[in-house]
Amino acid sequence: MPSAKSLVEYEELTTGSRAFDMRSLPIARKGYDSCIAHMPKPERLFDVGKHGISRYLSVLPVGEILISLGEGETPLIQSKVFSNLLIKNEGMNPTGSFKDRESALTLAYAQEQGWKELAIASSGNAALSGALYARLYGIHMTCYIPKNTSKGKLQMIELFGGRSHEVGQDYEESYHYLLDNLPTGSINITSGAFSLRSEGAKTIAYEIWEDMGSVPDAVICCAGNGSALASIYHGFAELKEWGFTDKVPAMICVQIKGADPINQAWKRDEWIRVLDDIPASECEAIVAKESFCCAKAVHALRESGGFGISVTDDQVISGLQHAVEREGILPEFSSASVFAAFLENTERIAKLGEKIVIINTGNGLKEIDLLSKFLNSSGL
Image (cartoon, rainbow, N blue to C red; front, side):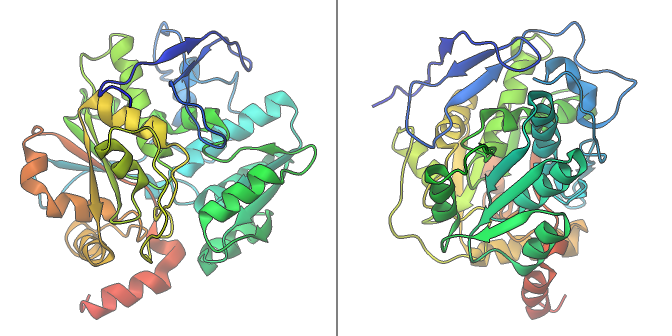
């Protein structure tokens, strides 16, 4: 049984075009990511002459982001209802999700390494984002997606030049299939299998810190694999380590009730939890039997003094209705879970402080038919 406070073991490695270390959590399990990149303190964090995630090139594991579509620099919006709440709208990225930050970094790294064949398992967002950036770099991308992937996301993968294979009924089956059947010559860049993806998403933390001029008291983020939550915590932890701030925000992990391996692992003081039977959910991006960045996400919750919140689809519908009607934001259904978590726990979250940020991880336009069903039923 691990202690309540996670200790990070150091493994000295040099990888990529920039010298840095990989740190490993004290857990090893095939297919689960437990590695965290550690960048040395930069002379300056951002380059005022650049935009997007390239602003933070001094602390990224690539020499240059050759191709950018304007990913990053997403708006941090004051809630129109709650004075203590800010909304980081990652749905404004080029393909409509925070995955574009990861793709921009990952494909730049692939280009540096001379990789020509990539493979990814995804419920949709990571695949369509990766396919677009890969096409622009002239790299072949094969996407392994579950049969329950939404039609809109599947169409976008094909439009962006990805070769898609429907494998399994759910994301976990697609993930394990690719893990066991990676084509010869291909590199698996799936979250959970490729640690450096998170270096793109950690820039969300840097932007929040820049925009606010300080660190929020708490950050609420939904989680399937747990990569976004772990990455954002990692970004804030770096800011503290480098002396830019004296604290990290409490990280709050939002998952679907009964399909919440990260939250259950955190509650049980475990690193990883695998669930057997899980409820059906329309939250295709976060419903999970396994979370392949579970250890990193649990580490984030422990180290930040955060906690998990598990919500139902009915609560997510209420969160969606609030986001559209009161905040003027159309989130992906899975992303609406953070609004649900906040609404259901306003008093508990308020005790953490006066500055709360929720992460809207994706844009709802890719599943407008589903959202219309829920919104029309409410009279919106």
